[in-house]
Each structure stands twice: as C-alpha cells, then as structure tokens.
Length: 285
Image (cartoon, rainbow, N blue to C red; front, side, top):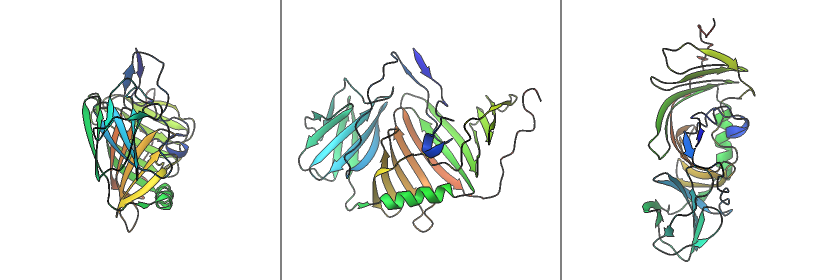
C-alpha cells in the first residue's frame, strides 16, 4: 500500500500559483504506484461545472452540441474501468477519464458514474470571464491578510476542518481543532500534532509568497451569474467555483473539486494587521 500524507501539497514548490500553502490534499491510498494518465484539458471554450460522485470528482464540459464528462480517480489521474453515461445515453471515449456525448442537451444534465448520479444545472446566460478571473487573482494576491475556514473531504470518509491565516509577504498559519497546527514565517516553520504538543522547528524551503491563490492557471472561465464564476486549472487538474463580492471582487466562498479533494473555503476576514508570530516555545527551546 502507498499512503499519501494529509499535507502532501502543503509546501510543494509552485503549488497554487508560485508556492501555495492553501492547497491541502487529503490522505489517499492506492494498491499500486502506477496511477492513471491525467485527463485531457476541457475543450477551449467549454463551460465547466464540477460535482462529486462518491469518491470520484466529476467535471462536465458543456458545449452547444457536445458534453464531456471528466472523471478523476481518487488515486489520481483519469478514472478507468467504470460505467459512465450522460443523460442516459451511451458515451464515447475521449481520453483518460473522459466520456463524450454528442447532440443537443437541455438545461439539466445527469451524469451516471459507477452507480452514482450527479446532476448539473446549466446556467441560462453564462458570459466569458477570463479577464475577471485574472483580476480576481491579482487583487487577492495584493491583499495584506486573509483568513478563511476550510472544509476538506476526500469522498472516502475523510473530513478535515481547519482555519487558515495568510499574510504578506510570506507568512501563514493553519490550525485543525484538537489537531495539527503550523506556523510559517519566511524560511522558518514550526509544526505540532496537537495543541498539547511542543512546537518543532524546521526550515521552510522554498519561501512561499502570500497570499497565494488556490490555482496556477485558470482556463474555461465563465460568469454563471453576478458574483459567481466557474473555471478550471488543467495543470492540477482541478475545477473551481468562486463566489465573490461584485463590488470589491473579494472572495466569499471557493469550491475546489479535484482527485480525492472536495474543498470549500469560506472567507471570514481580510484584516491587514499582522497577527502571525513565531511560537514562544519550540521543541528544544
């Protein structure tokens, strides 16, 4: 068995657009280190919506006369060896973890994935939003401080709730109630398994610029309705829906759907005052 740790992506280089601390993947297991190939990127101009089917992440790429269901395995890569149909119709293979159905479709689409049904409601008048998502990301990364609460599920029974604080230029902290905690300041970090344990100091390399967005590259960006945008990041791959204040463009709620990674971030504060400090008592101190 190969086990991937809970914080496998916590400090991965280049994550989330130049070093994200915010991408926190849940623990998964697989009986083989040979993972499936990644699925193809959604068609360039397709609207992409995402949902869950048990342990599978499901994205629906919508075009006027074509639908693609992209299904991610909980072990990573495109799912294989499962039954997938769209609106009850037989589908054709369109790559690793990709099933396509051609022809007209209505506003409601059902996708059957391994005996689980995911329903998608297609917005009536989506509009292209690539420039809006770029602006959202730039404004977010320019903030002095961000606090959000995160709910992270794996689809296989795992659930983690945590609170994150990100501060310019390179500070962040997270805390899981009665569980793990971390503080990162520049090239130094401190970790402990629970609030009762002593802090353990270690190097943090590379330095992680903050606040870091959850995505590297946004494609297929569409405004679904005022204050709600959907987009994809094929480089992860992951699929996002972001709710934001239409006036300030500050995020309110971010949903991310990826392999064994069903995440909801609820933003609670944009206080600029610095609150992250090195722990007073570290192991060996």
